[in-house]
Length: 419
Image (cartoon, rainbow, N blue to C red; front, side, top):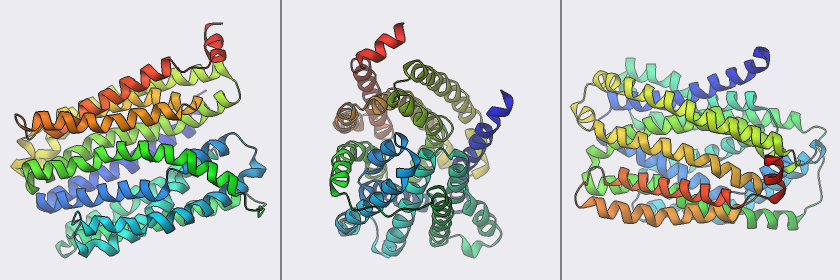
């Protein structure tokens, strides 16, 4: 039993290290750079995250489910057609990302870093997802660490001992190198996994179906991702550039909890959940879902307690009073992240049973909830309005998904659960 858990422990350790590295980068930037530059980094990273979603068209939501439910000899078909679909999406959606600069949401001096990091980050992210779907979670964890962590451990000592490198351009260059190395490492493994490679005749019907599924998820996910992109611009508008630096540090800390949950729990369990449902193994499906519930609440409480204990000590070390003056905002954002993680349990339940419409409605409807709640609180609590808006939006999203899941289960699943 213990021996079987070793791969998962190593997997969780690597992913925790990768997530912790992003955490460490934020602390390093907060220590070495002024708050306004930390805020600028936060805007850039949020824009990258949003655009990675857009240019991918969420096509992976279709291709991954196909990969999980098909035999290995057809993997090359899926991969070949996913590459073609991605190129088609790039032709239409990549030029649209110039809007970030047209509307002065990002300074024009960042255009090279933006597009180079955007493309390599998207490639590396898709490689990670494919490795997970191919049941190679340990390799995926190594690739994730290269993409998110290795370069950070290299550059922070350089920036610390050589102040001339304490610049965001050096961070962006290192980010680009890290994502490129991660992509090539993962691509090599996937090439070996799918041998002997077979070139398939182009199936545009399969690609069109993927676009249809992906676009449903894209609209939903864009609304969700907009919450964690618009929030930074709202904070800057309501409280200024320096307070934005505080918010970026805090949101980075609490989203590290979410990232760890995704790495240690969801990415490990959801492929099994989908596969069990697709193969009509309903008792196993229920067992995995229960494991997900206990894992989320167990890890969530432990990680939340860790943030509460460690955060004040690290903020003292940073030595800038602005970061210590608003701890109540940190606790509010921590509550928001824990509610978000709980809502991901019914999310993956809906994904497994194929209720894409339910996910779409939850995500789209959460955006007006965020806007309305933020507007209401902005007049009385301007420094906390954005965090309260996110708290309301994720609470609504989780509750709706739970209600939808409870009312969307297949009759055969319900029968199997009670038998």
